[in-house]
Length: 326
Image 1 (cartoon, rainbow, N blue to C red):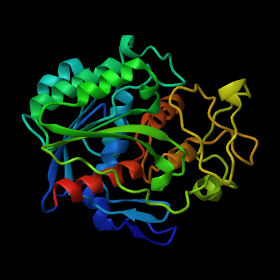
Image 2 (tube, rainbow, N blue to C red):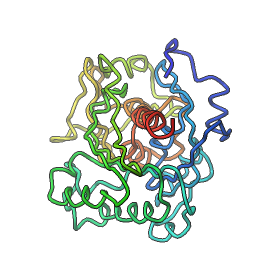
Image 3 (cartoon, rainbow, N blue to C red):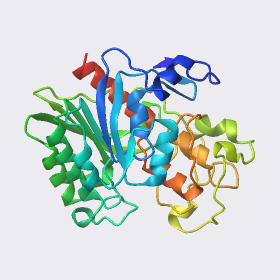
Image 4 (tube, rainbow, N blue to C red):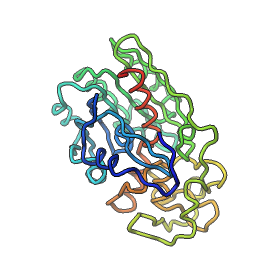
C-alpha cells in the first residue's frame, strides 16, 4: 500500500498488470464464486488507486469466476476480465478447474440480512454456501475465504454454517470485520471465514487506519458537481419514506452500510437535498473511480451493495500472501 497525492492515479504498469492479466513472480491461482461485479476479485488482484492510496499489485490470478447475474458479469468483464462465466452455480460447478491455490466467494446473504427476510436455513439463496463447500472439496485449495453478513451469526442457522465450513484438513478462523478500520469509508460489518489447509490458523490483520475515513473525506470533492452520467454520478429521485428511505449520512463519520435492495431509497447526502449518487455509493464501497458500471441504475445499485469492498479484500489478500505463501 503506497500513499500518494489525492489526484494521482495508479501507475500505468499497475493498471496494465491488472487489466491485461500480466503475470508476476510467485503468482497463485484463484477460483472466485458468487463473484458479482468483482469487488473481492479486484481486492485480491490489487493494482488500483482509491482516494490517494495505491493498493499494490498482489501475486494472484483469477483462473475461474462465476456469477448468475448477466448484468454483474457484464460489469466484471469491463473491469476485471473476460474469464467470468455467467450461469447457475448448480451447473457451473462441473466446469471448475481441477485445483487452485485460493477459493473465494461471498455467498448470497439476503436470507439472513437484517434488511432481508431472515429465512436463513430455508432460504434458497443462503443455502448456496453448500456449493462453496463442494467446490472446496473438489479443488482442495490451500486457502478459502467465504464472506457473508454479520446477521448470519444472529440466527441458529449461522452455527450450522460455521460448523460446515470446519472442513477436515483445514484450520478455520472466522471474524466479524469492520470495513472502516481498513480504509473503507463505510461502517460495514461482514463475517469472514478463512480456512487454511494444515494446522496454521489465519490471523486477521490489525485495523490499518488510526482514524477512519469520513463520508466527507470520501465524497466531498463531488458536492458541487452536477449530475455526470459518464461517471455514474447520478442519483435516485425517490421521495422520503419511512425508516430506511429517510436515512441521512453524517459528514464526519463513515457512511452507513450500502445496501443492495433499496429500490432507490438509498441514503440521503449529509448536506445536499438529494440522495447519494451511484458514484458516491461506489466510493463508499472503495471502488476506484476508473471502475465502470455499464448497467442501469437499479442494477448498478444492486451490484455496488452486494460487493465486497475491494480495499477490505486487499488487506485480507495481503495477509494471506504474507502468512501462507511467503
